[in-house]
Length: 381
Ligand SMILES: Cc1ncc(COP(=O)(O)O)c(C=O)c1O
Image 1 (spheres, rainbow, N blue to C red):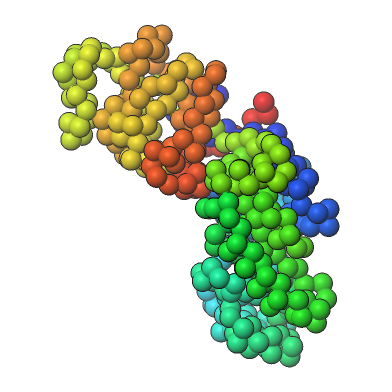
Image 2 (cartoon, helix red, strand yellow):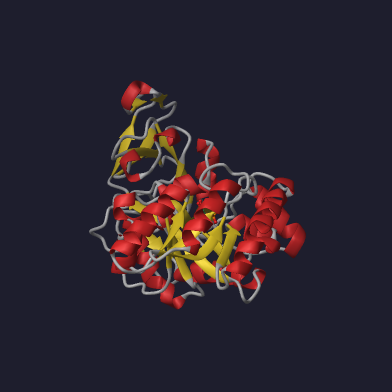
């Protein structure tokens, strides 16, 4: 990569194609595929991923917010975009300006969309979020009936879809709760779908599409696994039991360069708080990356990076913009060497699950918190 760069993201489009191909194999041919690009495309870069979409088997893009949807449009995607999160009443009319589908989470939100559509003499395409047990967004039966009454007499909105989201499908190999949600969704939406032909029903995230194909309906909303990660170990086990080995490959690598190599004597403290005292003469590399870039402070003393195909442990605390790592056993390490924070270096790999395990979180959070300001490059392998 360009020698001017101190840290950057590389995106492998062949991995994205391979991961999406797995979904095309497991969901019915008539089911459309949404790529979820919220949270800066799970940290991969909203614009960079959007520009790749025309080369991918993707029908719809899913975003969380109106502003993300506008960025997707500005990046050139003219196909369907569904906004999955809440939109402030005052901005609902913008869905028409940018040709977006919106998620309706309450009768009041539908009324606001109806008013916005009427005032512009057009109809906003609405997807009603159906409560099935997640209790996050979603309407119960009474609210759904109220919304349907509005839609039947509507001039400012049109029913485009019905959706729900599973609460307990990643964390378990037991599909009982997910199946109860599936049953509730089917029961609540069958009559509505019959009354409103062409309505798109969608419920499945990555884990649902991979492990419970009956959740596919008309469209699946794929996020984490498009980017090359199993949503959880449990999902992988359930998939293997049902369909055999499926291969997913991380799309993103995160790299930096050694800024400086220093020798420090045995017994010296390293970094803020004197939390690390080296027990041998130590060769240390100083890296220009820190928690403000998304390299979590929780990786202090326990994280590793890859230098010349070998692991180097983080020494002391991760700072805002700087990390120190131990390269005593990598004597060739030199200033300007490429360092892998996420990805592969020769035979060694660090992936978002490795960091997530150290930080007691999910790959989702590791990826989504990578700073959006880092330069991102599409690199064909
Ligand atoms: C409503 C909705 N659908 C789909 C997804 C995609 O989920 P996943 O990344 O597990 O595929 C998400 C992500 O959180 C979501 O909130």
